[in-house]
Length: 499
View 1 (cartoon, rainbow, N blue to C red):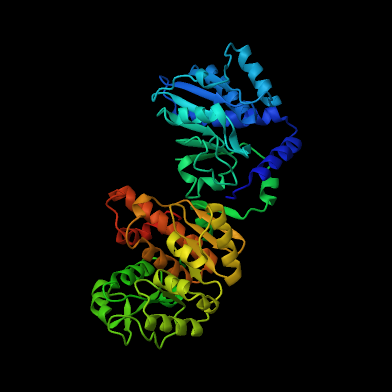
View 2 (cartoon, helix red, strand yellow):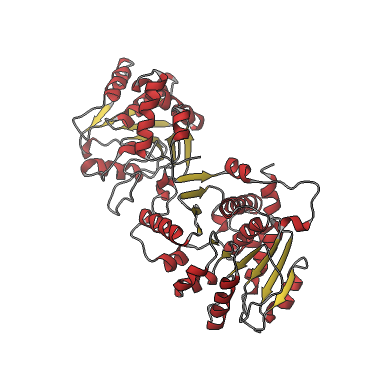
């Protein structure tokens, strides 16, 4: 699913109106009706719905919803937020229809006009929508705060009022905090960015019937990865196969006291379909690794407690480096030598990323199309500080282009940066915020690389599977009770959801 910009959606509205031979008012009726259908599904008939409608097209959507609520017998109170003397034509047309039904909006002109909002009410925010390009000021800003502090369940139409589509609000900007956002035609990028995602607790995409051919023709840098997209990438096993068909994964890492990280990665690689898996670790990890995972082969470094050589006599399909290695000079030098002789795309995580951050000349030696999997702090060390999340995204895009790498930026919504594309994953949950979760993710992606998935697809598909396994684990044992090993244990079930 593509993520479109505000300007693309505005143009799609106009083209759809022309191609379908309808008016803008008819398109508004269609969109608002489909939003109303979703609202009615969650409405308690004893609840009072308070609709706050701006005087533009977002307000027009709200007026249509108000009319449909009244027709359905729901208790609705409608308020027109009179922040300007201008009115959109579609707002005026729908306001007239509503008044003919005997439901005249109460006009709000100042703070003293604000209605009391109970925590038991349902609030519908249709004040500004997606077209906002500057912060809400004056008494309308106080109205936003009034709604936010009411405790009422708040539903935003298309976009929470005060939230911009292409910039992060300042700390002083008033923004509706929506419990649910019914967004038209596709999700918005700001729903997924760490600085803005908390304004949208949950969103649901409402297909308003815009011209499909035109939407498919649009270029978008941003795409969602959900179940349908993951299923399109998945390559199920054929009947006539053997372990050699699924690749040999080499996982290099570990140091004294941090052998658990590479054990988690190796265990997950096998549970994600790698045919063979070898661990290359310091000598101190030999017994723990052989005991924990009998299915894994183990090679040991000359170093007793840290990696110092990284010499091996095998040709793996993919190398994964970095979990628990530390950043000692001998390890850094060994990593540099490994990079020089590695030609295939590899995966670099954890201390591998930290070594690259402190020795940026090594970035030129990382094989092209390799996958780097930083969390935000590791990313900051790699690319430097950023002004806000939009600046961060642009800096990662430049970094990816400069070094021809793939970045998996871990977070509540994990972003995969590949070439000109950014893929945003929507599986996963808060229970995955636990030690070792990133080591498990590295195992998934590495296993997919060993099985012949392209680096982009391995990263995108691996992130989805990792999140889905977490969702399945959380459903069974609860978010607070999850540990990273649980995510690994649910990998097989994650694959099965795609069949």
